[in-house]
Each structure stands twice: as C-alpha cells, then as structure tokens.
Image 1 (tube, rainbow, N blue to C red):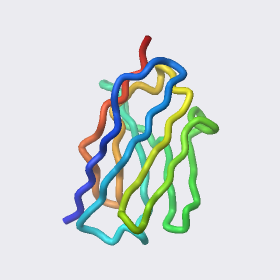
Image 2: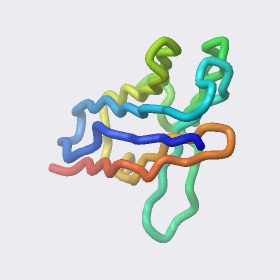
Image 3: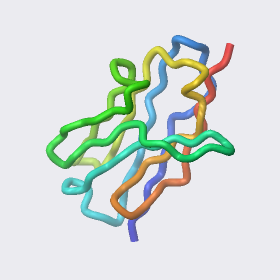
Image 4: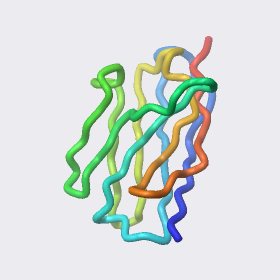
Length: 111
C-alpha cells in the first residue's frame, strides 16, 4: 500500500521560500505521474504542479516562474521548491500519486 508523507511546510514572510518534500513508499515511484495540490479551507483542492516519469513538468499559471517541481527516483522523493511566496499561496499542500494522497503540510505566508 502506497504511503506519501509531506514535510517542509511552515510560516514564511511574503517573498520568502520554502521547499516541500514528499517521501513515497509502497509503490513503484520511478514510473509514477506525481503531483502537488493545495487546498484552502472551504475551497476546492487545486492542482499546483505535476511531473511525468520522464521529468516533464506542468504548472498552474499563478505559480509559473516561482515554483519548481522535481523528483528523485533513486530515493522515491518528490519536491516542490517555492520561491517568492505570496499570501495567496497559503494553503495545505498535498502530494499525490496516481491513486494515493498524502496528509498534507501547511504553508502560511504572512508578515
């Protein structure tokens, strides 16, 4: 059974950076399509970024140029580097494998 565990969230000032990590186990990671989502309380969960097994990445428009998704297939890790964070980026961020979700990590951007 696949397990995804996110880490790296926290409180950061506007303009700051965070790097989220997702440790994946119990599945074949290297062939998996992986994604980061985020959700604000009371709103729908939204796709932030995705990456194919070949390393091709896609981003929602609002994070393009600021966020970078990457993967380490040797260690079964997924990352999201987030730069120039803004208050509207505040949310719970979730790592997603094809049919499995992590439990999320809170990101709060506030002065």
